[in-house]
Image (cartoon, rainbow over all chains, first blue to last red; front, top):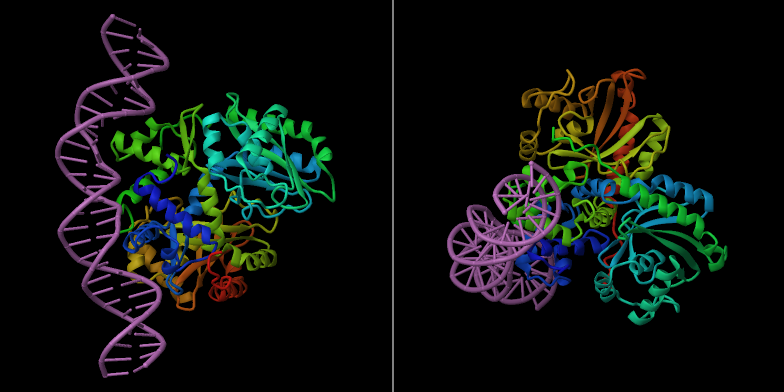
Length: 261
Length: 261
DNA sequence: AACTAAGTTTCAAATAATGAAACCAAGTTA
DNA sequence: TAACTTGGTTTCATTATTTGAAACTTAGTT
């Protein structure tokens, strides 16, 4: 029941569509790619704009995701994501291993990178936080899937595209499932250049006390710098970080429930 | 007609409410502060959760803004905000003046800080982007208001709280309007410790070729380090940045309208 | 066993969303 | 200048969705 609950679901679908263009769009472009009839889409766009969820540029006649999202995301990132909780651990880990560290969470069938740390250059982070990737061919994606309860897993598996990016990309549910079993058994997973040639990573899940998947950590490198065995040797170190993050997440108590002032 | 258009508007109101708590909330806390009846609010929360706009923590029974927002905000920040366009100018300005520079935009009656640069310590920015402030007592807020067309201005003025933060805070529309006239005449405005004692700033608007308010830039300092005259001397330098940003914003052409691949 | 609080479900009535079609405004083109 | 576009906006009867009081379910109290 994930997609399309009521009017709100449809409106958010429109919002996603605008966002997916990656640039401001005309109404006419939107209508071409939309399942909704003109008048309906028109009203959604109007409503979203009036709500600042979309921003209308009157000079150009284009729509883009609006600033209200930036405000809401600020809250989301602080409260719902592991990023602020994990910050210290991610910093440390990245410094220790000298490679790029990703912190990701699952949103439906997609992986969302909520934080990233690059030992070498401390890149500006907003540009990275919020980036999405496919779950079925990334280290973090597979690792999170591996620890999902069966029903949710089935759901997520059904929503993957299985597009072949490289010749190691999984292209069927079966082969993917087989690997997920391995990951579950080992406690960690790899990205074997499945998404981009030359890019490999190890990934560990971040699990709550009740074994829910909270997110995943990964250390990424290139085949020119190291290999899977090299990355595997980092597992114990990453495990420390993952455990520490999980622990903090569960003890994370919010300011004693003060009545709203 | 800004607030409460249809079901979508109500759902977003709920989303805002959750975000405004600043921490994960129980359903019961939400209902206490909500105008909606139990069943209605319940359904909204369900819908938003199923859409990943809210995240439900089953261990604690709490709701928080969801990760989907982070993904959407990524798009918003890149496309709708001035931040990526202004980056270079903000960097330069901050380095030149050696003070904190803010880049802000207006969302309804609120100011949203979309970027911030601190010369001294290059602080992680996501934590700041998305932060909101009151329009009526911040330099950027007043400056943006000053250049709004009358009807919009009236709207925004009506939505301010006029809460007295310090003894220089404007507490009435009249006194605020008077200052806005000055700002419009001068082309820049100050924050005279109106929001926080000891904190002062100068702010300039970023205006499109058609004179629409795109945002505002400000340089903030403290009364111990400088004074209003000191900040005023920076106006020409800030003006250069503001103009450059406006120019880039208007020439900002997106990748030639390629049909969707 | 009788309460209470928090969360969830029902269902007829009220309301809001829907979308085909008409309309408007700027451009073409002939 | 008149007949076509193309992109955007409005109307309005029909249809589907939302609404919310009330009943119900847990899971904790007392």
